[in-house]
Image (cartoon, rainbow, N blue to C red):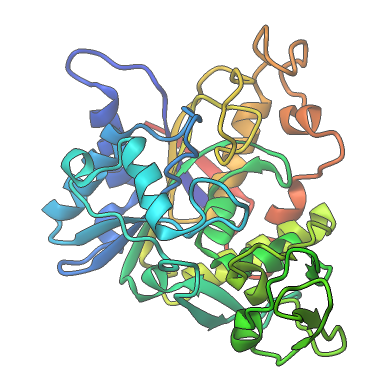
Length: 374
């Protein structure tokens, strides 16, 4: 069976502006069916890396918050901390970045709660039946929420070809240690010259795979050593080390990483399969992820806003609509014609289909959809 995906384009008028059109879209897609009075509703959104201007505009978020409050729900904005060292790697800087980009309570009408806490340690191990994982580390604020509205800016992505709803949920709500798992099949390593021998990594290691040994190069005479035969590759040591002496290994295949992201998305939706709505903004379609501190010229013209209760069908519809258009003059893929794959043109070595195929296999949704134009 196919899933319904609702589309509304970016045309507007004095009596029907884009905020009104978004409201009509999410109501038609079933917002009332997934949210009940009293629900704590996580609005999953990317706050944008400072310097990047392609993220979702805050008036859309404020309208969504208002709609949820009208239904008697209690919405909050959320995302999990990043693994890479940037402006959103801990809750303090993450919230500061969110506010700097306009996601302030006074603007949106909802508080910002970082899903995995101050340093990425606040998560719940959620059981999944996956090919790569049997349990995943999901930010606790998302797990404990009663319902979820996932607001996604659809764009290109260096690892997955495109960044859509699955990426927003899976990578976005995975705790920092979960992001390490999704990004790498290789064990972390210790940069001995940077290690201060503080022993904090060993205290947090769930596999007891770290020993503190003598080393002349450290003033304390100690350094961390990872026992590879015990290490699970969970990434806790990477996100715990205060001196960044334990480095993540960014080594995996695009297929494995995309499949892992799908399994994390499954974990994020566990218990909320009938309590989630997904809306994608297919405009300002930049070739790179919003995690970059910049955004390049869009690769195609604006498509519109799409919504569904099926995240797989939604991502597939967004890809198809983008690929149906010709590339914009002056973009990084200028000259790529209508019907050609825009994301493979940007990232020739990436096959974005892996994430959708695996998501369908593990029961997240279906790639078959019927498009309902409003």
